[in-house]
Amino acid sequence: MTMQTTMSSRLPHVAGRLLLGLSLALVCAQACATAAGMQLERVVLLYRHGVRTPLPGEVQLDEATGKPWPAWQQAPSQLTPHGMAGVKLMGGYDRQRLAALGLFKPRGCPPAAQLWFWANTDQRTIDSAAALAEGFAPGCPIAIGHQPQGGEDPLFHPIEAKTVDWNAADAVAAIQRATGGPDALTAPHADALAAMAQVMGCGGAHDPDWCSPGQWHGSLALAPETGRMQLTGPIATTSGTAEVILMAYAEGRPLPEVGWGRTDAQRRQQLSQLHALLFDIHARPAYMAERVASTMSRHLLDVLRNEHAPRLNVLVGSDNNIVALASVLGLHFQLAGYAKDDPPIGGALGIELWKDHAGKRYVRLFYQAQSLDQLRELRPLDEAAAPVTLPLTPMGCTANEPCQLEAVLPALERAAAHVRSSGGVMNLPVGALLPPASRR
Image 1 (cartoon, rainbow, N blue to C red):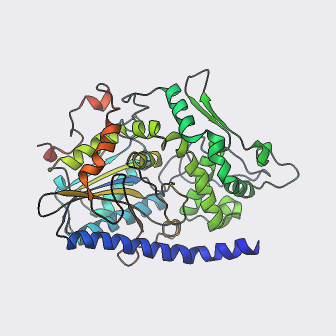
Image 2 (tube, one colour; image 1 turned 120 degrees about the vertical axis):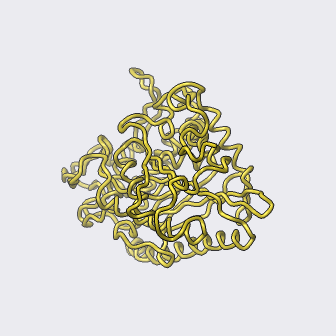
Image 3 (cartoon, one colour; image 1 turned 30 degrees about the vertical axis):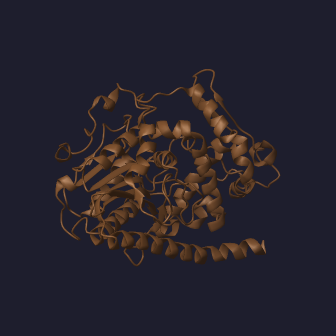
């Protein structure tokens, strides 16, 4: 217990040094590009929505002694006012950073053709996009594009929209081959499952069965009645439950309302690990990643190749969109307070396109997000107090060296090849999602 307390007390200091080091690395990468005579042409930011209320069915476990879950003021699945404020801070920081790089003026309303915001069809993503836009250009009439609310946008949900080649049996077999199955994924993380049991109040005389490590087994198969993938076991029950607790912390709720007062920085990171395990089933294996990110990859190919595309392209979706695209590009990430490959709340996977004097184009990839404490406290963001930013090296490129655009295109092309030639938005010509000024 003494060692755990000592480690936990040191975590904020370690995280602070890590944040500073990552920020310096990002500044170096940008400065080196500028010093080499390269010019920033455009930026893509794939954001995860901000802090939201629990999704229907997200909580799969109840507190072991019967204590109720804390109530939320907003309806299920909604972006909270706190979440909106956090996302708005990120939009303001994006404006500061991109103005410093010469892509935009520091203030005022940018021309409409220079901006493109597109959100998935949920309220939390649409309102997150609106908050990003308001933070980026306060008071400016920036259009937030999206398909009809509540529908399936193939850009974010190509499997559900049936615009991608997909077979559930093939998916299950591919996931089993890639991961070894759910039990192989959870085996290295018994500590995280034990932390979840402690947070949920296990250890009493009348524990539910799932409190016992002997019950920590799961399976992935086809549901006989529906033919769909069916995941059982601790990944299925703890991933969403853990995320609800992390959302409560990011929301700024009193600590007794965050896992019944049983979390600290170390345990929250362990809960983040359980949340991330779900993506090792549904988003990161190659079969899943290339299909979940298929339409997104096709769109990114158009943005990166189209010289008339907007300077800033902001897409707002969910965590699985980010993990799938990261997997396609061969990326892994871990930001302060989160487990490896768990997309931070309200953070973004970024792609910058640079051009040198000879007309050669390069990309720089990064992940940016507020730390959990920055988001919880809604700390102002600027160059001196920046969000956590992690430089990323896609497959085909070398760390700390310029990455040619051509190096990342094959991975995007492989994923885009899974898009069906008919159905939904895929009947539109390439570039149809971009604003009219870009379709030249």
